[in-house]
Length: 316
Image (cartoon, rainbow, N blue to C red; front, side, top):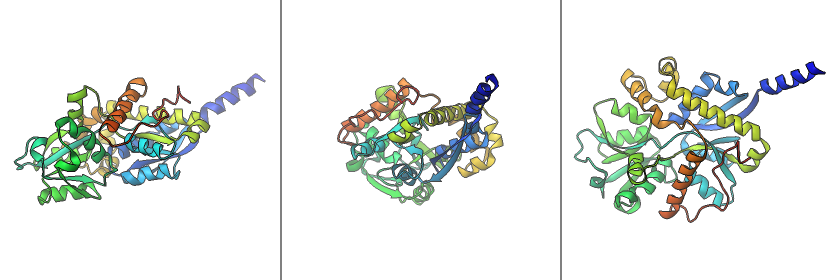
């Protein structure tokens, strides 16, 4: 009898459960999931994660259409989708805001305010994280993204870089790791990080993409949700604390477009500002404040009636 009980609990601890999530190609999100798989951080937590990578909008669509169990989601988009009846819940971190405004090194512009009425390039579309976060932060500089700038869009961040080089736009808004790659060279410079505008006003970190799933899936798969939360936090801490990653994971870094030693080291030094290494009341409060500000600046008409940012160890 005792041996049977011991075997049962051993089996419970060692069983590996499969789960499918979405991530984003060529981004810090994609690097996080690469590291999870490369070092078996999912297996350590009793999971076998299948990662489906896509561009940002497609990765969110996969979650919304239930093509994956969970995946990357922007909190403001999650709030919008909840108001439309999609009971999505954010339950684990991906990253902070890592978006920067970049100009050519010979540009005459040195401040965001100087770009008023100029062409500003964005990846994706108006549902993308870069655009949403500029909509929220630019008013803090008495600027309206939709009326004070000529906004242009490209399907990929690399396309935006080409447009900037050709002076088809005066500035572009891009995210890590491409920021690290560009700033490691001598052709571009950074006017501002979007999160600096937010921090200057509120003294708070600026959240960005998180891990989301439908409420019914989370309730049915409470232990899975907790394991995913733990896996993502462990992976974020591993990236921040383990220098060996940046020498061992050359293929993962190449997937980000990082090949030169200087740009890899720039990305490594920026990692602590990219990845969210904890989850709990303080981070949840930061995201809730972001959503309240999104209402203030009319990105969403109101907050959802139900709590959409949860701790799977407390709220499930």
